[in-house]
Image (cartoon, rainbow, N blue to C red; front, side, top):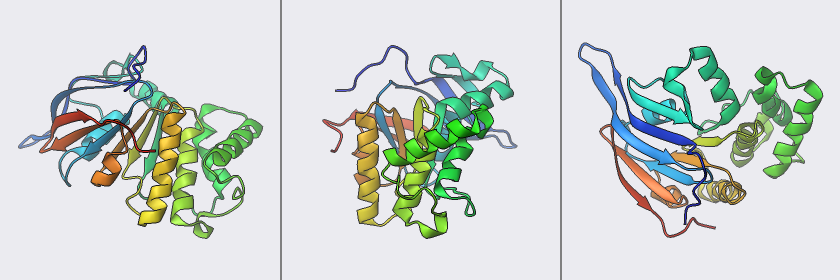
Length: 236
């Protein structure tokens, strides 16, 4: 069963987003959603359904035009852009399909970059980056450039970069989309372990086999969030 934390990590209160026209284009219809601490939620839907809009709102990349979005109890729709940026950098870790690693920086340096804007001393950034890479099984690949890493290793570096700031939320966008079946399974097992260790994970995917790894799945279609159901267990 889902363990309920004292304060939800994500709380959507009639949250929606409409792009201005003419004509106005509703990308996400007003919806309610709560994601508790330690929960593993998956979001599914076809292309153009509103998944990217959901990701952008949840990740504080876009501001909803309707409703209120609370992150760790903080109403993000009521704060300044500068504070939203700080909140995003400190409380949300992103994992993207395309990895988004800097090609001329090694694995450790790519992870360290996540801490640059937090005014963390360089020596501590180095120590924390090494610990994060060790946590995802890449402690032996600190000096490797992305071009010398496999797809699975690059995604693990991306996950280490997302984890190194100790965020409240790990937000994954098609985390296995660029990986072969065996490599994807290894990444999913890593996410399973991170969840077992207490991480709050929201993963957006088009793959039903990925979706069932979570405790609960929400569907988005035509901008409407529907069909919330809880799985009997997360996959091991």
